[in-house]
Amino acid sequence: MGRGKIVIRRIDNITNRQVTFSKRRNGLIKKAKELAILCDAEVGLMVFSSTDKLYEFSSTSMKYLLERYSTSKEDHPPLMNAATEAKFWKREAATLGHQFENLQENHRQLMGQEISSLSVKELQYLENQLEMSLHGVRMQKDQILTDEINELSRKGKHLNQENMELFRKEHCIRQENMDLLEKINEERDANETNSTSHSPNSFDLEEDESIKLQLSQPQQKNYDTPERKHQLQ
Image (tube, rainbow, N blue to C red):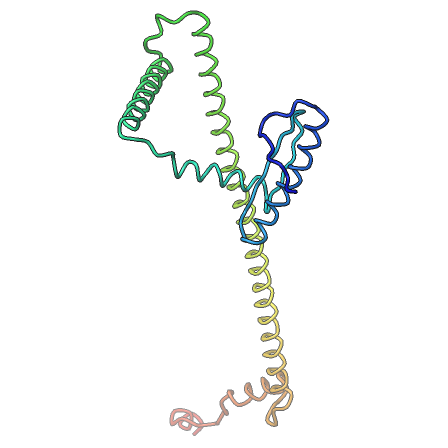
């Protein structure tokens, strides 16, 4: 004998209602799992009991499914007829116009215009807004200046390191040049000493000077003039 038809209405008996909820909840979650596996579908299920207890199932991530659901609802709004759509856009235009007027009024008040009709409380609120805005501007300015100072300091340190490295290289090159010059002078002195000591026609300086003096003196000869001969006769 087949099962009889169940009337779909609220079960008055609390125990029977709880048992039915538990059975049908488990069956619903089982069907959701089968649907996700068999059909490669992304399924998300949330059930709240009468006692506000949450039961959920998701084939991937419930947060991802909710975000996807919200995006899909925004991209595909419900269909509306022409009259309803016209009313909707008229209402949106009125809302945007009202927001634009409020923004213009707020801007004028922030610039110090049209504030004679404001109360003390409204002026205090406006002053707080200006102070908060000014504080944010100053913080941003200080942050930019601090970043620029840090960047300049970093560049200064880098340039200082480069200068120190160039000074060290210059000192090394100068030392190498001095060593090379000293080596050249030592080699030249050694060559001059060797050439002087090994010459075959060299004489002592004193001997050479005496020979030069002897050669430079003229020989004296006795020549008798005619007058001297006459006197002698």
